[in-house]
Image (cartoon, rainbow, N blue to C red; front, side):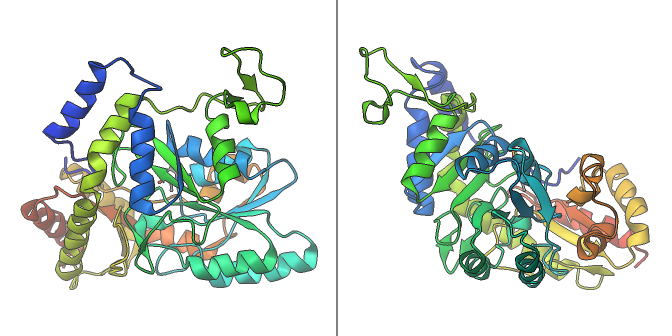
Length: 381
Ligand SMILES: *Cc1c(COP(=O)(O)O)cnc(C)c1O
C-alpha cells in the first residue's frame, strides 16, 4: 500500500533514540529541552513546550489562555476533531466559521460576517483557532487584525504547517497568534512517534503551559506561593496533567528537525508534479501555494457522487488515499450539541468531493505515476 503520508526514518534517527536508551534518562533528561531549543531556533519563537501529543498541546494552550465554561471558541469545520475538542475539554462552547471554498481554510470573510453579527448579539468569541489545513497558511495578518478589533485571542493549530511560511518567516514565530500548536504524529511534517509542542512569545503563557504539562507543579523558588521548606519542596499550584514528552521522543525529533526543510522541498516538488500530471483529469487541484508545508495533497472530484467508488477502488489498487476531513460539526458528538447538516455549506461541499492523494518526502516518481494512472482509469478519462 502506498500510504497518504509516511515518516522518513534514517540510521541517524535510530542511533539518536538508541543512545537515549543507553543513557541515564529515558524521560525528564536533557533531550526534551534540547529539542525545545531547536524548535525555538527554527521558528524564532522564544518559548517551546514539548508534550506527548498535538492534542495535549491544544488542551494546555486553551487552559493557559483561560478558556472556561461560558466562553465561546470558534474554529474551522474542516479539521481534525482535536482542534475543537480542546475547547470542550475546558467546558467552553464551540462554534465554527465556514471555509474558503478553494483552500478549505477558515474564511476571513465568513469570520468577519460572524463577528459583526456576534457583536450585535453580545456573543463575541474569546478565542479563535485557525487551522493551516494541508499546510497552507491561513491569512493570519487579517485574522490577527480582526482579533485586535473584536478582542479575541488566537490559537494557531499548525499541526500540518511546521515548515510553512508567512511573509517569508516560519509559522510559529508568534507574529499573529498567542500560541501556535504543532503535532509530531508520523504522518505530519517531522515525527516523534506521538508528540506535539506549543510555541509562544508570552513568558507567562509559557510558564503556565510548562507547569500544566506536569500536574500543575513547580519547583522554581521564584514562583512559590508558600515559603520553601527545603530543597525537596515543590508546589502544585493548579490542576494539571502528565502530558510530558519522553527523551526517546525528543531525541527522534531533534534528529529529524534538521531535515525538515528538505522534507518540505521534496513535498513541494511532488505537489508540482501532481499539478502537471493531473491537469487533464476532471479534478480540482489544490492551489500550488509555495509557502505551504504540503502536509496533504487534497484533490476534489468534479463529480463528487463518484468519490466513494473512486476511493474504494484506489484502496483496492493499493493506493492509500484518505479523506480530510469529515466536517467536525457533523460528528455525532457535535450534532448532539446542536449542529446539523447545512450549518456550514462551503465546508460540507468541500468535504463531498475531497480526497487526499499520497504525498510524502520519499514518494517515488513511479509510485506517483501509478496514483495518477489509476485515478485516470477510474475517472474514465
Ligand atoms: C494531527 C492533528 C492534531 C492532533 O495531533 P496529535 O499529535 O495526533 O494529537 C490536531 N489538529 C490537527 C489539524 C491535526 O491534523
